[in-house]
Image 1: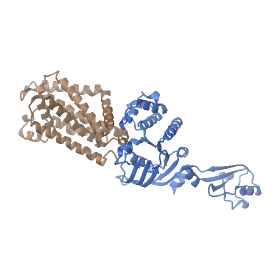
Image 2: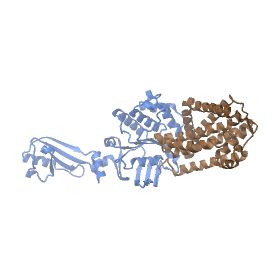
Image 3: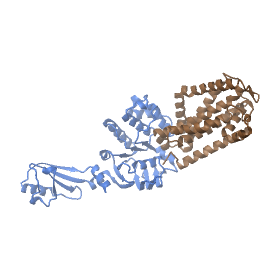
Image 4: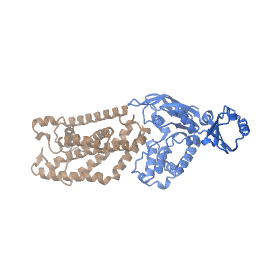
Length: 253
Length: 306
């Protein structure tokens, strides 16, 4: 194992984040505030409670997940796309760094950044509502697993994309709709039965449900189903990344 | 001593069907400066990229320091430094950070003294805190060289190192190369500037259309293929060669102002004295005589045309 190589990539990627710390943190904080104003105050005025949790507090886990997913994908996809675009990828490929070590460095940094952002959003929300975290361990576990899984997914997008616009397509067309439809701002049990069934095909439902359970012990699906599904998505992404490195897809000719 | 680079039966066919390398066989000894010459698209960069791990070979064997480049990629890549042809740099970084990044990426512990040494040698020390985007093209090229040297490689690949580089940097670079060679570093360079191969290299390989046409000690190559040319500068222009001089193999050149005689400097003993006596006999006056050895460039063009 070239641990020094892994940590070099990790630190380099994190430095990029801290260089633009203000931009990196200000946008999630502003969007959190907006969500509280729009959803918390406007809708929360009509829906006071869901499953015994005040509406404002109920949407906190969903909101964190929303940012976590989009940030993980954009951080990781940009992180690997940029060296490909600028040509500096040659150095990673010619270094004594294995494919897995490269993934650890890039994906690890992307996931670490989005976990930080998630925690900042959590801290911001406590300014608006009182948030209780009943199972901090499970909360962190879901936070980290989701960040890693979607950073892996972002890494794949960053390898697949051959233009800046392609980096945006999947997050915009697939991930954002899935997150909004995944119960970020509501419990899927309020939906008509047909749409409830459809929702079970949305992977994001499981992530948000498990994460919300860690806060309030209320969930749409059972905790272990959530955990299991999260691991399945991670395994799928890992397999895809493994395939990419075996075939050299978009990295080596 | 076993060769530091051993390549046998190496071929590369890209997915487009383009055959970039065909059955390359090449051994390079430790401490050698080896120049790879060839026109654009000949396969020079592909060969280097395979040895460095950027391109996957289609078939054949490639060993660096006795290690297989795929199975033992950690060992081989640790030994290799690569200066790519294009200025691939992350422009937002500072020079110092970019160079130390390369060292630890290759798994070596941080060593500020070593980085300082490299930066000073490449006249980058004053620029160490500058962002790369603020540097000129030549300075960026220096940063690439510094990055390739940061992990103290045993083998250095320089892919077209002097393309678009000013005289000063070329001089600096060759000084660095000489210094590295004294420390036993093997250097493999590709170049279009044939004078450089002529000046720097110990051995020359000529590659064309994916095939290694020839690998030869530079001196042997020059002697083997080196044509010599004797030019006689005449006082009075000649339109036709006088009868008496025919049979010497002379040619009229430069609009009749010169007579030229070509001969093989090594294998032929030219009868220059006889030739000059012939000129006297024909009452042809001349004011200068010069001989020139054909350069590597001419040899190279002759090979590639075949």
